[in-house]
Picture 1 (tube, chains in turn green, blue):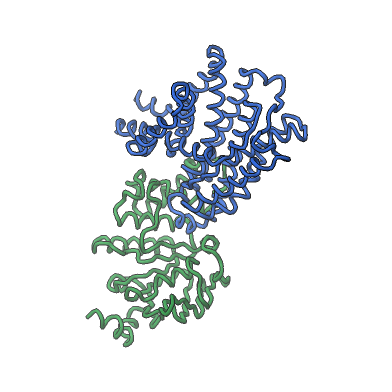
Picture 2 (spheres, each protein chain N blue to C red):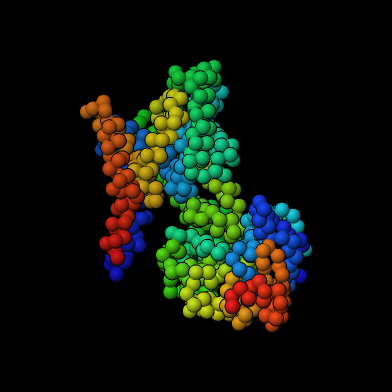
Length: 246
Length: 313
């Protein structure tokens, strides 16, 4: 088992954002966490990646307790994440953004005298190809379209070669065509690179097409976890989520 | 093709032209110009060191003068109180500044923006207060005069070359650091701390090391000024010194490597020449700064760079 979350809790005042959550992910598994806005999906990611401290509970990764570690340590243990609101270097070019992430991932950031530009060029090209940004290498991150920013961020996450990837709403704010293209990319990457991934999504239709396992979050709890068919049939899910949409 | 070639050669070509020019400068320039040029070299190094924090790191330090001051006082106290050899004192000055930068930076670099500015300012005022008030140790506001300089460096021309060589070596080192993986990490931190953290880097460790390196070079500049004037005064570390060098960086352009050098040269020359004609030279400077900030927010070099880029495209 790669990730094991035990009785994780986080409250903001009276709001129980993450409430007694137990969750497990095996290697090479891809799990979609769905739930309406405000269900606690992003908070859950923030707790796993150390962005926020948990009130109680444990996050075990490869059997190691990550719960009290700072984010940078957690990332070095092999977790990469993207953010719901895109999080890139606005003035750095696409190429250099990936290159910088590789420098960080390979622990070369204390190297004072090499020329940064010459490092990891081939790998950068390979990652840009994987996320479909080869045409835009010289463009500053901030000038990209929304969809391309998301691709760039995904490329930066891939550059870390994480054992576990957390994608927070990879299709947030995208037009339908862009959403389909992005999900196709994610699916393609998962198959080619044999990634272990958890991603969140509030739009169920996007997920049902290809996720093999779906967990449903509602009011801070995971109320269902299983194969898409099971989720579709689950009466509680139908009541709080599907019912709400129909 | 020819244009392509010319474009590729530009930065290093200009660098060699500048080195060649200033290598022969003392052969024809009057003595006073040599003195002024040496002073500009020193202030330029000071400004470039600040720009490692200000321009590259995006942290507005208003206390950089204190490392300049520490470098200057270290050389004065070591050669005059402890009577240490010149060579040791010259090496010890930037190291002492770096040690102080390590202490001050440890507390400062975790902050950003105005909080960083105020904390660096506060620390530098502490250092200034020691230099200004502690008569037994620093001779207070009388300063320390009569710093001994070896026979070989006593004329202005040999000293000019001494400063020039240290400046060139320092600039090459700073240039290398800025283009290294570490230098890129500093820029990445300026652009998006969160992304850097989530790339697995300890942000404040990098900013701390950057602060220490900047302190080292500021200390070197301060010690060179002490030797040029054969004297040190507490106002080397007063906050106006720190603010002045921030102005030089902004004036020349914080986004370009030579920006702080150009800013240091222009402001030092203005200070020198306008003050011959009027007592109110600061008014001229103030007016220039207002015009610059409004019309050329990227500084002089930022403006020139944008123009060149626009023309190329």
